[in-house]
Image (cartoon, rainbow, N blue to C red; front, side):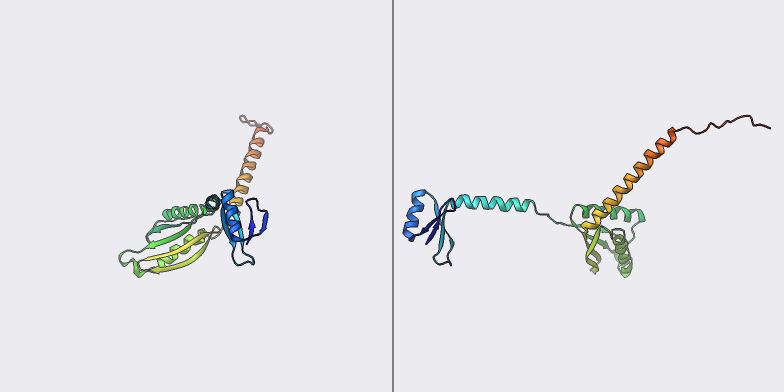
Length: 196
């Protein structure tokens, strides 16, 4: 058996009994690293501490992973224009948070006889969000609900944010330029008696 000590240095090829005695002497565990190798490789280590450090690394890795949740925004086919805009902003906000969004149109009673209204509504919402979202699942009727699933388009969101920032910067510079020109006086204009 080839044995590696706690610092990672090779001790050499020794018998299993000698390796176990060495582990007891140093008050550590003898852990088989590669049993298929010829000769098998074992390591002297504190196995409990090793498992603890490994679990800490895994939990740290999970902490940095992006967690995607499926959120749902519901509406009815007889929704007002203002409410559509509000729901669209809500979907955009959820997409910016990194969530998937399921947009659902709920049909009641005889509304189900006109599924094209729900399809048009979902298409309108997607058209408003086309630069920040992509369809993961196209609009489909499931019982009395028609739904589609949208996921965030990170490049589109970044491009939209840059465009907003440029527009805000341009507006700010125009406002500053306008404020400076108001301060400059032009030729005085007399108001009052006119010359005949």
